[in-house]
Length: 340
Ligand code: ADP
Ligand code: MG
Image: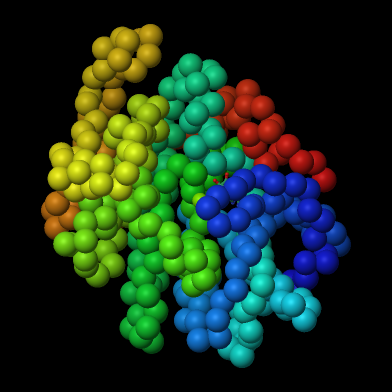
């Protein structure tokens, strides 16, 4: 389906991140709603080829139920509008100016969802949803990395992209489907002009990725760490490390300190008015992901056969639990706030 920026009606901002805004937009002719990420950046011609390859990887790997679907990208250039369809790449394409990435629209992201649950409802995130998150992200790892390995075999120079697992990048819909958004490409697009971003500032980053002495090849296990931090944060309602003010403090705690541990029981008062007990599967899953030494940390095959992930999920119960929260959430915290 071909379309240009002119065919899209902007309904307003639904999210904002480091590199740009995400808006809800409707395709005029079909009345179809999408999420459109707009990145203002210029990419020099030398980087175009690499970028194209990586876009291709992302599109191929996005053919996965736990990654938001990509509809295409629109590159706005000074001379006019160019439209790229991922199925037919044009290598001579000049990338300059704005890049609009069009993707499937989800209901909300987990950062908004979980803050609402803990801060407004004074409730907890039910384990069934944590289980769904662990399952979806583990399967995504499998799908994404297997795709990349397959592509690597066909052609070199495709660099691995970390998936950046954290609550604000995990999206949710009313059925309880979990999908990841935010792909390395966005950082890449902008980083080509603004290389100033400090790698150490990412709170979900694994110890080996922020420790300069441990510079290593791309490893899926670094993303497994981020999943562990994310599930722990969602289970307890707070980020497992105290607030860092400098990268040095972060290094001191994440690289030199012990990794966070999820405890099976919390007495009343420590995490809310009632005592909390987590299942042994959940506790074990989180602590397994948060193995500090990367060479002992699990990869996706171990995660996929872990009891917390392998245990089946009652789909009706999941939908009921998710809708129970979403129905009480103000529309301004969801993408529903703008009606067609
Ligand atoms: P950044 O790279 O700046 O972090 P993201 O792609 O993560 O940008 O998007 C920022 C926020 O926008 C997300 O946390 C989420 O709340 C919202 N958002 C992004 N994509 C979608 C989408 N497809 N559906 C619904 N909300 C989205
Ligand atoms: Mg993000």
